Length: 443
DNA sequence: CGTTTTTGACCGGCGC
DNA sequence: GCGCCGGTCAAAAACG
Image (tube, rainbow, N blue to C red; front, side, top):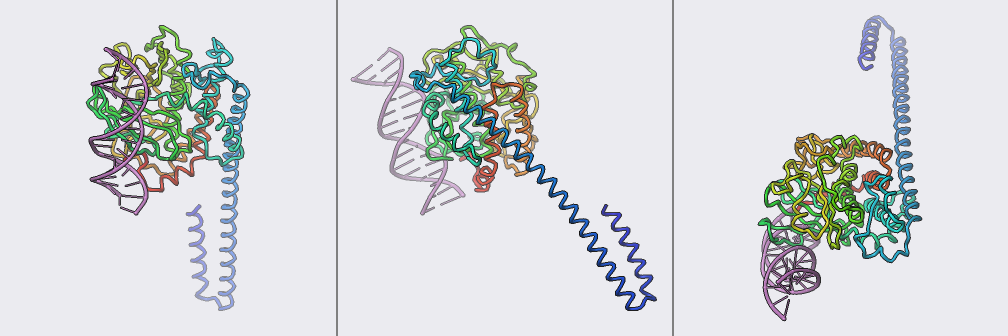
């Protein structure tokens, strides 16, 4: 297009020059006027093109907004349904951690198994909690209703979910993984059985946020960082933190679910791992957590801090149970607590949809023959700093992918829908946080 | 100067 | 009751 315009312009210039030699001043004036008209015409044509482009972009934007609204409406519909199903007068809700059960990762057939009404109600309640934690931006009309629901459920579900711990094992060279959230160190201890000190962090995104995390190097392999999350965020999260938060919260919920559904003798085995799990749903966090229900441990006795371990490392810990690498040592060392271990290792350089680790370090997921849970591919050389367009692409991919997951596994609907909502709603927030210039989550 | 990290003190739960 | 241990507090130091 550019080239054709140039050539035509060039010929007219030559033509003009040839005329100039013998043309009268009047003729010259007329030709200049004609040229101006041509320019005006071409400019008009350009503007028309730009307008069309603009209109097309507007259409696309409207479509995106429409999709967003649809997803949000679905989410709130689910909220309402779960709310109606709840039995708010159930006196056992508040303290009985063991009975907390979630549908997260549970197929409908699982639900029909043995769940009694109260239990399933609570499980949906908890599921709701998981889904609600990361969607507080409130930019849409439903947010007020959502917050109302949230406040009512907070006290019930927070009690339980707060107790669940999610331990993440990942290769990391720095003192802590960059999970996108903002943490402040408040203590450090040498714990028994591990020469490496354990650091205690609390979330500083919101002063009232109850979330804590413990960071400790694996004694057997100091390149492995064990990060244990406890509690749920009560504030909107930066987009870069939503993935980890969703993952840990979902894992915690699954753990609690498993606490009530665990069956004696259910032992993990490689056969329980579907190597094609990534086909179930492209989101590693959720689909594989769902998948990993198979790894619930039989222990369901009274335990103050049930723990679930997400293994993001390539190599199993050398001291891990002989049968399968996914079992964490915490299961052995803390037998009084139910512990579940999942491996999110990947055979490719996939990554959770957030930046785990600093710019100078690895992403915590390396080659592995374990469950392929990957979805969010990241260039291996990419650093922690993420450009805004990349984030947008990430959101886009996430949204599309999660939609597929929702269709394929109804049990994941609320959590996934929330993840989508949070990503969309928190997009601007994330950018603002990033613009603060702080290296989020790091000392 | 405000924020974060460090680090010893303190506290509560648990086992003996 | 005592000691151990994990977790938290808070004053001081360090940092930006």
